[in-house]
Image (cartoon, rainbow, N blue to C red; front, side, top):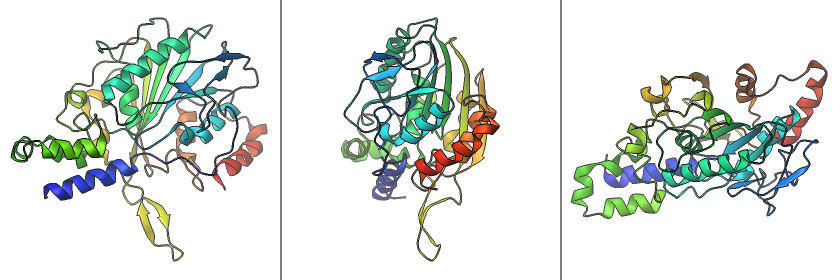
Length: 321
């Protein structure tokens, strides 16, 4: 593979590793808010799960809360619908806002600080951190021991959920870490990789310390649900004739599995055949598979039989089906 082709593949991969904001998102102040939420709080790095200008959260401090972490090229608005799904089941949510071109170590440190700060506003802090794609890397690294900027509150009851996260590094970025190529190009290879990915350009490769030494989860994390998507043969868009014109394949199973993460204590690995965007949903694509996994694993409460019809109506409203 030529260096130019490798960089092109990296650009394509990073351009699609997370869903994009829905232009037709329903405008509400805070889609993750519960009816019982009465306290207004401002936490650096947290905001409602939409793309609006309001960043103040309205929470119920007596209830657990979910923090949703988007991937690269994503936004907090991409989790608007999922926050609505969680709220329907009585679970409040907020979204972590960060620059996906920053170093992943920087972003994970910011997330750890955000979790610490949010916990101060909760009566009995119970927090579930849910990260998709690259957001899964940020989420797990925020919750490890011996981090440069660690989470300090030892009293938080934490759960971690990662979805389609490339824990073995992004294969398309492997040329960014090739020593011979980096030397031969006198730094131009590094510059090109930085232009594509930003300060995390080396961290996302399989050669980086970030990937090779994922760290051990802090004791406060009682479980890590790791959702792995088998994205082979998936399709995101089809033409009028039914032919696939944009696939939904971003990361392979090998990219999503790394023994030091997969086999870590308190980690449950669940594999599902689903596309990278399909798993979290977008307009016209309802994330039934993710909801089913979440409910079976206790992340989302079961839908009461008497509310099934209302839930299906909400899904149709949110996802256009």
